[in-house]
Length: 338
Image 1 (cartoon, rainbow, N blue to C red):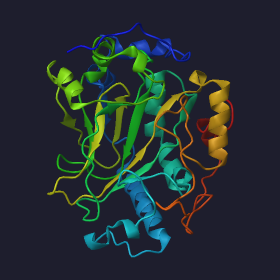
Image 2 (image 1 turned 90 degrees about the horizontal axis):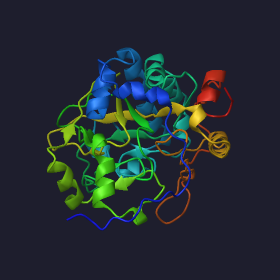
Image 3 (image 1 turned 45 degrees about the vertical axis):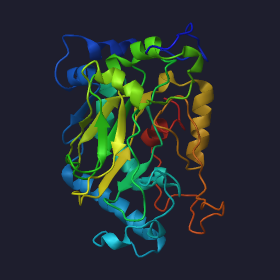
């Protein structure tokens, strides 16, 4: 049953997406951009050469093993919370300055990744998110698997295409392995859903909206169903932030350790001076942010705190291996103007 819908409101002024984005949904567009427009997601094969992708994966493993524990990637009995640095959602690492480790920045700076987003947005003057490293160990015995949490990473207060998210894939992602699940085509229906099935007075400017089982049934009644995205090391997965999605846990049959770096890019011109100043501050503290590179920048907790509030003595205020702060990196970070 549709909710009583109040008149739409505006929490704060959002900069509209640039006119260049209209080309993505142009009926003449073909290839991967057409797939992105129709389905709300696409897998770009071989965006990073395989050897370099596997090198970034190995660096991620080296980083995880740098905390002096008994973690052994070949021994599932060691895949436990006590052998891992503090993390969230079972598999997401964003503290210890990992968002600014050299291997993370090197992956973000890969030409095949940056150039894809430059083509989407029609500009080379981009910002990148300071997002997390995800390493998912299959079938961990010490945690309860997280149930699906279908959501979009765009506030109902925004309209149109405003953000494209990305996963730099560093490990095989088969149908039984942990990874991204999307509802193809949901990006074309979600705004109508918000207007006819929700109360606009409850909308928030935060760029996330989680769907209940009842709400998902509305999309399913329109013929939509979830698809597990499969990819290989070096592939780039991108999706419209209005596309309903979630990260699935590995099936009991999976033995694959999922390793990915989240990275989203957007035009620097979309960022306000206030957001740029905040982004620069986060960068200088080697902190992390949300998926959004240019707006709704929220500083993640930079300290590694145990559940009792005490700080991990292994915590790091700077990356273990600092990236080279080139002009290109500093501009993507919002620390140097274009």
